[in-house]
Length: 314
Image 1 (cartoon, rainbow, N blue to C red):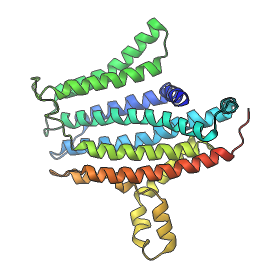
Image 2: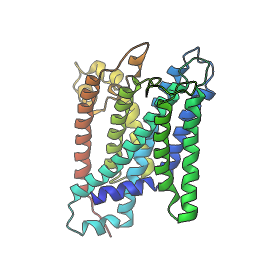
Image 3: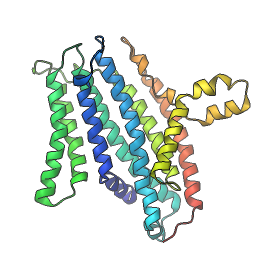
Image 4: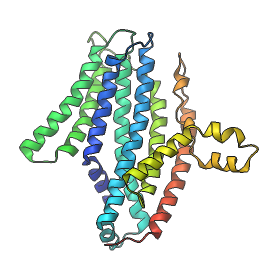
């Protein structure tokens, strides 16, 4: 628990983590304001674009945090100092992943709230719901101001405090927007939110965790750029696995093997099911979660074996 907590704290102190979190949130907030030629389907454009942004940014953040937390410590010799204590390597490896996974879950939760707010802002075609747009943008700006004031008056780190303030203010904005309608009057919480987005966001969160596990496994041997490049290749290959391997899986042994080994990201990207009044059943989310858990477990086992056999120098 101590190693996982310190890993999570170190992760949110990474400047790139906060900048990526704030930048993606600002892009999602501005989507309803800058999109044009939506043909009256602005809510769909915003929803799909924001969810895609959530996935890609999760890929980048996971690779960066894994290498900053694991590979950098191996290179600096910090890991050898920790392992000189009565701490087993598999426990250390899993604690590192747990800390990174906690930050990734907070990142995904924040972006999912952002997607719900932004989709509400674009709920009506050609009309911007400013009662949801302004609190969202104010939360992002307020995080920079809060982190700066804490750094100036209390001499505490700006990045980690700004990250915490950003998540807190975003949660408050989500609650406030949920209780007001597009005229500023009180309403039942979430009456104007499209909660059909939640299952889609949960599926993408599962995919982001799998990508984070792949990044942690690769970070035992590789730096950030190679890790990110390989994860990007796995991401693209998994999106195309149905086309390249799936149609030959029944007749060709190699295609069948590659189809089963490659993560099939199509299981996690089912946003098209929300077209019209469509729904994503939570039973499907449960099956996908089982698939993600099994794949994540296999990747982490490979990572533990790689970490167990590597030479750690002081």
